[in-house]
Amino acid sequence: MVTRNNLGEFEEIVMLTIGVLGDDAYGLAIKTEIEKRLKRSVSMGALHTGLYRLEEKGFLLSWLGEATNIRGGKPKRFFEVTAKGQRVLKETMESRMGLWKAIPDGVFKIFPSN
Image (cartoon, rainbow, N blue to C red; front, side, top):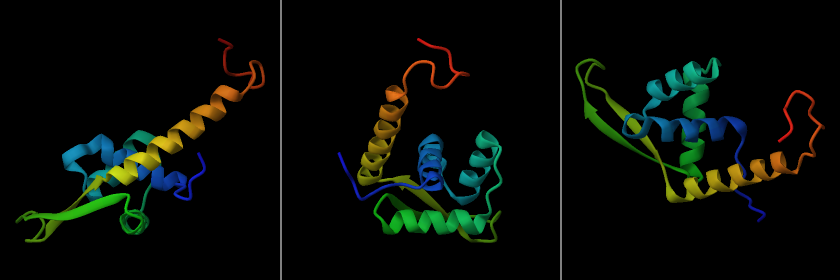
């Protein structure tokens, strides 16, 4: 199936990380989880740009939580992956798995043959 909703690598990572975090998916938690799991530095600016771009595409939904004293009265913005976002993630996963499965045995020497 050809789709015009292709995801970039960073967009995919952000959406998958939101799935990992579930109800606790807000900016700093997403950044921390990506850095911890992928050993990759992420700036808050790049993350926010990606989050808002994904929201504009309809792949994410966001809302403001309650204000807290810890954040000086400023609320956290939480994110979740929409049904449309879940569909594009599934399409992306299936496309990549199709490519992996199409590689003939022995082409990649560091991967054991089945």
